[in-house]
Length: 542
Image (cartoon, rainbow, N blue to C red; front, side, top):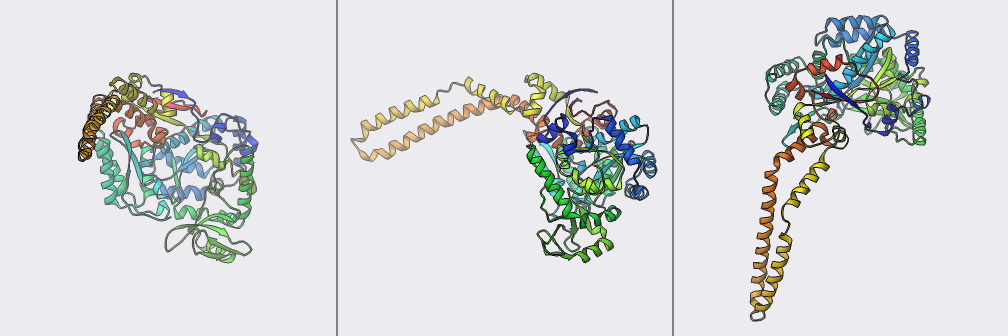
């Protein structure tokens, strides 16, 4: 596999500074992900702790059993029951696996688990946390595809779902199949298309919800790697987390205070906090049984009552205690407490995160300490851009720098090319119009004093002549544009492929485009390639 490395700024300044080693460990993070001594300390600390290993392993066995568990994954489930550590990361359950960065994150988890297992000489297994409790349907219900000169969103035509968990959104199998067929029609037919469509069709048949569809595809793609999957929206998983919901619910005010204090430290250091929180936030969602909407719980100041933000739900402390005991699956975590549940359930040697996760985790370090835990080391996920041979040839033909295109796109170069085109066309029409208007006005003045009734006719005639000249100029420009459309299309192709919608490819493009055109060997190659976790961006030449 041919590739080059480069340093690109992350999506936010905090993540960029974190990756570049600018931030001090003690201010926002407990461990240094680049310090092997710190990683060893973390492993020793985990070995001294107790975890619900049997319960977690049994849950994973039950969840993954729907999709087929490989021998390698079965071995890892048993290793989790014993003394294995885990590398973990997560993502929402996007259609057709979501954007490329979901795949990149999983590759990162698998590679880092293998690397750390070899270094520590003990089992370290990869775990992918599907954020099925998330209710932002609009983030998962579409894919982007290239259509003509731009990227177009193809949205699953299901009805609005309110604030229902993605894990509870039923997959209409006929609708999903029809949508998938439309996606493949846009992707174009290759020798792999029918096999891929059969695979997707089979996955749809095996799935009842959005999350299951996602999990089914991911499980198949990484079947031989030993990857383990959990769904945080699964009622069985939430029952597993139930003992820790009590601590979150009744110490919630202290949790919020710690986050707010840490955000003040961030601001003093020149960074902008991400988490939207207030002091009364309970940091738990309640799942309304009638509407199936997630409602964030908050304490009502001066009372022992809890109320749903933006809803009519109200509980006393005793009622909340009873609900937590009887129906723990009615609750789920928010952005602050999800990492804490992860820490309680799994022996997390390290967490793989994207730029946004790195930034918001910095706001919750004191919460780990408050609850008697330690924040795990955070590794930035591997970041890739896949460069097709045809696109690479266009880069050379148009004399474009790959790094410049990844940073800024190539719209400026395209505009420069168009300006040169216009300069090459004699731009004399404005002078001609000016001369015509002057001569026409002189003619009008010579005649109208003989008959004022001719003035409107002169004005109409002058405007017709000017419009004809403007029409001619427009046709000349259109002719030039058609003549150079091929070159303009090349700039668009490079922009769409490498800097779509103003950002990195991995945030927009769906993996199925590359699976359709190149098979899955690029995934296998990325898993095998010796790639450093040093914050670099990898440009992969297909």
